[in-house]
Image 1: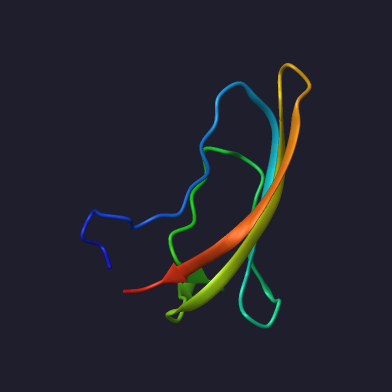
Image 2: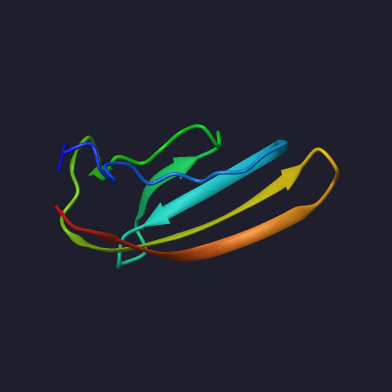
Length: 79
């Protein structure tokens, strides 16, 4: 909502070598693909404001030491 608190969804990590994360709406439509861990999702969809809803994310990352991790979860978008 632009108040400076929780306005973006982001991943965090150190020594990340590869990263990808996908955010989907409740119907499984891809909303955002992120391939840089420093990129955030600002709650937009197709260039406009995404509706309040539950979104699903899944992704994977590897670090410079060769450790691989996959992750997934849900985001509640509330304005």
